[in-house]
Amino acid sequence: MEMMPWGYYERLRPAEIDSIRSQHPIAYLPWGALEWHSYHAPIGLDGMKAHGLCVAMARQTGGVVLPPVYIATDTIKPLKGFKHTLEHSEETIKTLCREFLEQLADEDFKVLIVMTGHYGGVHRDAIVNTAAAFAATHPDLTVWAFPDSEPMEGHFKGDHAAVGETSFQLLFDGDLVDLSLVPQDRAPTLDDDGVWGDDPKNARAERGRRMLKAFLDHTVTRINESASQAT
Image (cartoon, rainbow, N blue to C red; front, side, top):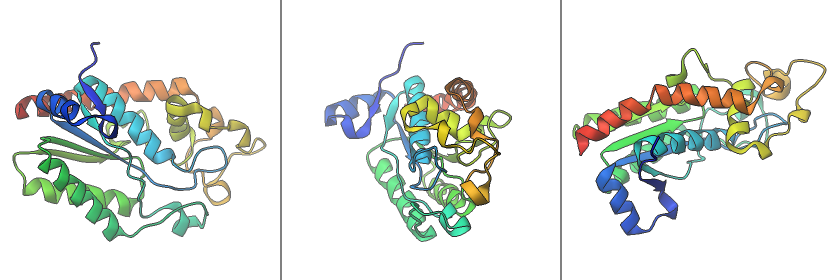
């Protein structure tokens, strides 16, 4: 498949942004967290996962991909007490989401995709509801905010540092994963290890690749259709 004009927003010169936006006025905002993901995975997994998925979409739709936002609420820190996690307020998330959308609209992007790789319910709802309120007052724009697991129903139900997220991390930046640090004599748990879901010892990059295909199958057409209506 021919790659569409796209780019990393922070790495583009002004004329390059203008050229991409004139053809494909799509902006992707990946959202993550700085949060404990057990012993074997990096603290920034959610953001790296969301960023990798956004880049994969942009390669097929065109547009720009912003750097991940590593500001989250409803993390594992207040839930289970795991350190190395930065917890922010719900109001901070709402404010940031609204201001990002306002600024991207001001930059004349017409299709705004906000995707969170962090699944805390308060966090997810803050983003989804803020985006819906923004969309209601901007009928000329397409705004789609969602957790990355949503388009992969039946392929990836969403987990925390378990087999699914770890497989994505192995696919996008596998050098940051050390599966030898997963408890080998038992299945890891949420209380003891911060793992929610199936055993990450079974994670593989190829599994991540299959999930990525399912994800793209359920997102790219919708985004391309929205972009074609905007240009």
